[in-house]
Image (tube, rainbow, N blue to C red; front, side):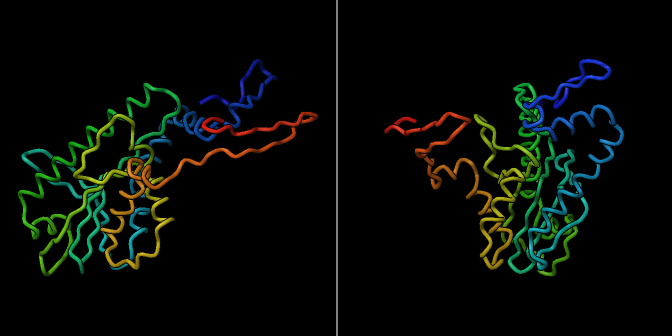
Length: 247
């Protein structure tokens, strides 16, 4: 991002309109990370706990929520489950991989770096979790997740990959064994779809995220056409007329 100010001398700063209007907070965050690395990464170490707390707040009280991370072994390989929810009435389990990758601006190199770190590692997590589920019964899975359930029964399991920033990149196929969503998508889905009466909170959460995924929303969102309008700038009067098929 562009800096909001440029120093030209000891007593001279030039303010950049572009820098002040185009993601100034993004610029500030980058500078703080560069100048105060220790404090920045101390804050980074606490962000997963905040992420998990915000996620759990979206589910009603009757849903069991596991506070700690759960580490599992699969074929001599270890992985962890960042967040776990369980519906004791419907016997539905939700397992989450939480990704808080840094945002990026217009750099294609940074964009490629985010893709390279997010998608392959998430697919690896899905592979390990799927193998762990296949080789364990319901009772063993619940015990390892530190969930007390007298019935030792699981009717359904949802896998989620939630990224704090971006997750739906163009030309990237996502593993359909999991539900992928950005946190923006989670907020939008939770705000727009409320009256579901919590009959199946985990299943409803999955359905909302799938409904508001970029690939699906094309089918129900219409492209809004630009309407004719006019406005004044100083002594000039500007009229915009929308031609048929063009603007």
